[in-house]
Length: 371
Image 1 (tube, rainbow, N blue to C red):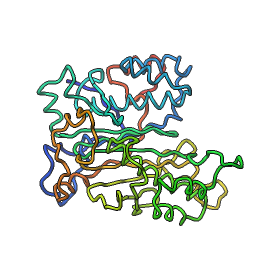
Image 2: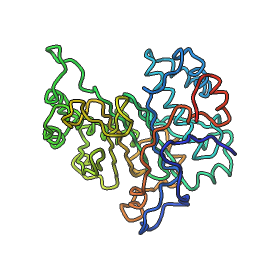
Image 3: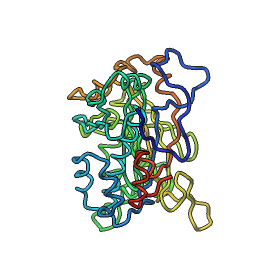
């Protein structure tokens, strides 16, 4: 089989396949697993002619099954339609790349909690070759998120993954006086969602912009956790409390307690990225020459990795795709080698990178740009 694969701007696959969960943590960490993907598309930089009625958008819609096309067009605003379309194209491109199957053959399902997954065992083209292709990624799964300017995807070969992007402007709802609420007002309204320690950590920053930025970081972690678990609205976010360790100016590692109990099998990485007013994924400073960092355009992207035992799948179809269902059952060196395995940085890719290779020429004729 020959499958299309997006062509990330910043990185390509490296390293060998992992035949099974490694029994010992390696002395020298290997390169990221080929099924460990981190992609992002900035939809604010994509301007299809004639919006959703134009040939480029219609061409991309035709790459999806009918029910997904209808879901994309159901939105009122063009930016929402773009987010929905790019998200679905990303999911299919990732599955086609990892499983080495044609883009059109990819079958996607959702759990009861709305977590998307690759239903490869239900595909009409399912055979021994497909099972062999996925043997190196026994629990291959992915997650997507879209908010603000970015649509992002993360995938993992063994650990369960969740991803969330939190965009600026979450605190823009009007207060009773008709103005934007202060961060303090927001923290009061989210008393049941943020723990005392989380609220205090946010208050510790000096400016309103820094506090709002910290709020987005906390919120993104909570969303990534529940999305990985597949619980949707079934878990109160206030049960999870996060604390952070700074890696550098724009990235943190995080740990979580749920109901006061440390969840030592989970890993969280959260990264600050910037949108259209600056080079994507790079620092952005104010224009007043003071050097004060401008946070109003900053998004936070959080990736969560966790064990299979914490996943909720009422229908069982997602679990049926796993070939290592006990991954993470023991918090030992075996699991730590999985959950601490290297991951690539998020790569900024273009919409054209999500088009199957055999369709690139037709995409260009429809007005699309592709490398």
